[in-house]
Image 1: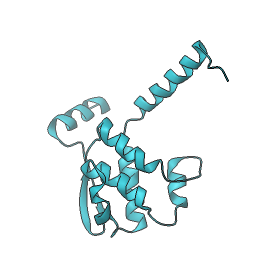
Image 2 (image 1 turned 120 degrees about the vertical axis):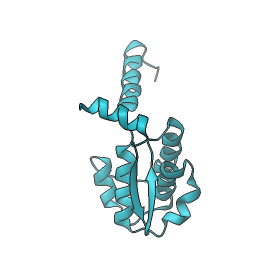
Image 3 (image 1 turned 45 degrees about the vertical axis):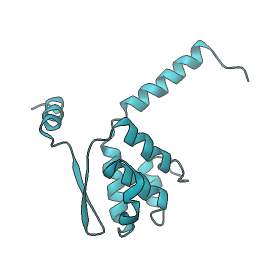
Image 4 (image 1 turned 30 degrees about the vertical axis):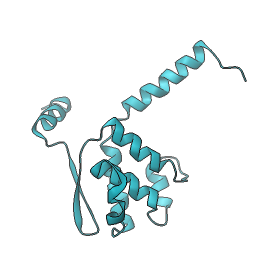
Length: 128
């Protein structure tokens, strides 16, 4: 079965989710909606990180911050209400959860927006 057919069939059967264990509790992460992605990004954008990519930046963090937990909570339940319960997790559990959250997002929409911005800049450069 090709990958596209697998993605579609998993979505139709409700099998397009991932489970992650944090603090001894297993949480289910479903493919996020635009609203969930925006809610999570709102919290992730408060975190100062350096690195060539997001996974390198996450490895630099000494501990999970409040904003990281709120962002993961958005992926799990759609809002930040579960962040307090996620505080029981280890840093490695939080890192794995972040990796799973990011893997559930299709970045093509973000790439499209970035390309459209570049095209608009070619068409009409703003005055400086």
